[in-house]
Image (tube, rainbow, N blue to C red):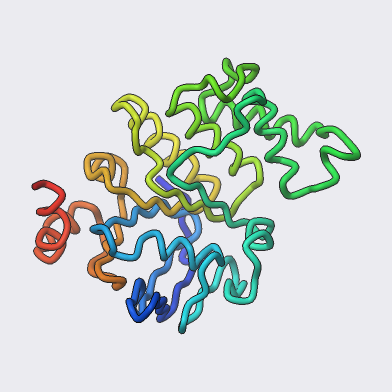
Length: 252
């Protein structure tokens, strides 16, 4: 069970994003509570990636408001300042420092929020403990000395998630984290996401419906930039609108 509260960590209000007249998001309302693990699904062109882009400040909305973590207005923040305020995002393709060890990748990530770390001082005891705790969480303790470039695909994904976790995010956004993984790796990732939700809120954009069924509790379905349906995964699967625009197409 996630440690949820009724307090929102993210509140997207009436957001519209247009590209050359095409509305990628159309008056969208979307929110997630603190301590919640939320899955977002929808067909191609539904607006899933655009949603992540506006939340992280990469794309500016034509209208509407995005409030993060107690009232931070995303529209008035730069991407890097949002990271320092607790917003972490992972893209589909893992991005790690191939020539550095697993431990060194996490050490470098700790320094993202403290530019003086690598230049003026080493890790303190708290930071070392954070890295070791994260290694245990992502299942890479025994691989900590291995160059990241030789890790398996799933291990690279877990390492990058760990690199975000050591920055102590309050909200983590993950774009198709199990793409290209084996079944065993997908199951391990699902368990990892459930564990992470005890530390911070998590939004997962995903196409793998088996993975969603196995690990999601609350699902948001987007279609044509709008919220089509939202609720428990069991209820969403039965919704005729979802079956028509997405699940039926995915099954086919």
